[in-house]
Length: 195
Image 1: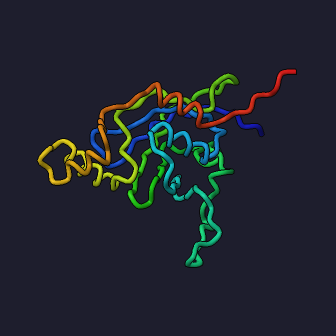
Image 2 (image 1 turned 60 degrees about the vertical axis):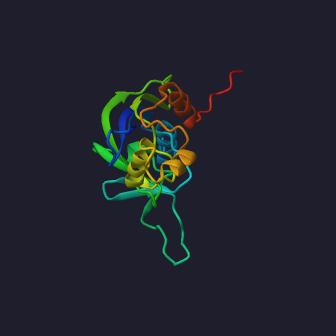
Image 3 (image 1 turned 180 degrees about the horizontal axis):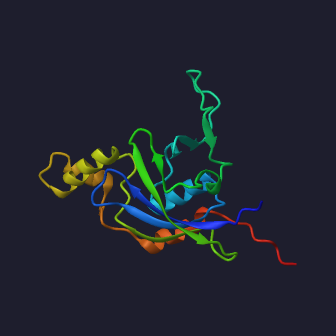
């Protein structure tokens, strides 16, 4: 039995943040979770500095580690390099992506639509989004709120240090066209050479 490939329209929303920081992408369901990780990183504006994993129901998908220094391994983790979206998302309406295990950036991912595939469709494309991605290493959702409060208030005791560290950060700024271009580069496809 041959499966018909399709494209998935996904809405990726950063959890525990108001106003919402979200991106809407369309991806081929033949992508691996590793490729989807790259799409999310570029769509959101992360810099891929930290560990990550996906949670699809009770299944963990990520980088498999044979054994850490304490003798524990990730034998129950599905490899993101080989698992394709269509293999694990059958019948699912949502799943999660966890980035930076220290700052705990959880992303809620809703499968909004199943679209027919087309030979000329790009592997991934960004359709829309709102608000800037928080800076890396700002302390997760709660540290981000503290940072924004300090940046807004020149009398805040940490205003100067946050201003120096974050620069002219605008939480509402999102460059859709730049992010679209980055997402297109996230998944490389090999085209057959024309003879």
